[in-house]
Image (cartoon, rainbow, N blue to C red; front, top):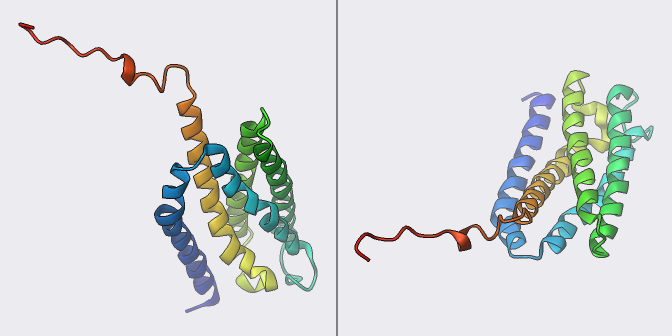
Length: 182
């Protein structure tokens, strides 16, 4: 099997494993957790892990053949995602009025950044060896981080739906039709 196929298989396997773990272990617990706490648990790891993306710009960590068209947007996109994760986590912990908006901003940016990096990597023809020691970012970190973005979106949409006026009380106000003869 060639290096590109092995690399792709590793990414796919980690993505599937992350999705299975999220479905079996994380999501059932998150559903029964205070929404603010659940979001904090999912956003906080990004404060640490997203800054590792700056490694794409470090000579010696990556191959000199790694194209700037991939490395620069991936590195700075992760850097901005990390900063947004810090802001969102602080807002969530302090229960700031703008916490949910900061999580939306972080999650939209962070998910788009990861998806764009995968797209851009294919477009510019990244070969696994070009990533050098930073290969683990793509194979080991990006798939579970992308899965956490999906979980965050689910929580945000669920939270938004629950807060819509009249949404949570609809069933209480439903009148059952009377039966004839009663």
